[in-house]
Image (cartoon, rainbow, N blue to C red; front, top):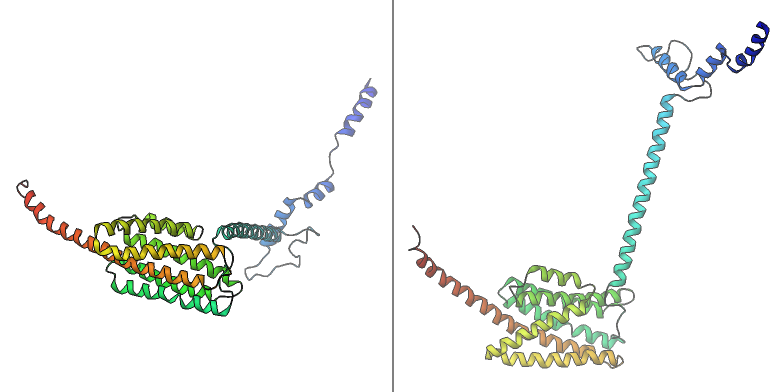
Length: 321
């Protein structure tokens, strides 16, 4: 009976074996606990001057393994490397998105192409020369206009003349950008013209027109020019002094539109663009008469308001306690 019980207990003893002392030391030495104990002992052995009492180097108890400090340093290095990689990826992503936006914006810019004028040196010189009247009109407006918006419009006309001359004198890859600057300055000048003709227009409307200029310059110029034509026609009906300039303005505008359409229809005809320059600059010069009338109206309105203020004060005095 006893032998049977002893025989039955043998497999149980085989399954549950107590580890030996040497195996415990080996597992302890190969674990992280041994690392911590060894580093603590090594730090305790340092003298105040920084020398080690024995010749046992740090980490020698566990050969083939790194110290905790070096492990932490390498972990920090790996973390910084990952951060640098993430930063590089983020920058590349931003650059890629910026490039996509720039490409889409470039595709949406208007106009496109170098244009059909300036086929020879003679035509190029004529187009540059006929750009000078815009500068003259701008200088005249800056000198004779009384309001800040009128003077700003005059300065924009000077920019129109300079951009036109730069476009007609450009070559190669810059020519397309020169043509864009020509259209954009005309559109911006039309926005400032509307600002000067209609002082009550909110600044947000002018800002919206400026933002739309790089993408739809012809549309912006058309809307502003239409508003100006209606204003000029109404002012000429009210003020007989403006009828002569308004007729000249209307004739030059119609002939200028005809020259513009003829240039698109027959691009081989010479000096059509130069004729358009002269007609449009003459039409722009007549706008000074309209601006003078608008400024006169503003002065009369301010004078009436100044006269009404004392009367309002006298009327309000009996009501005051």
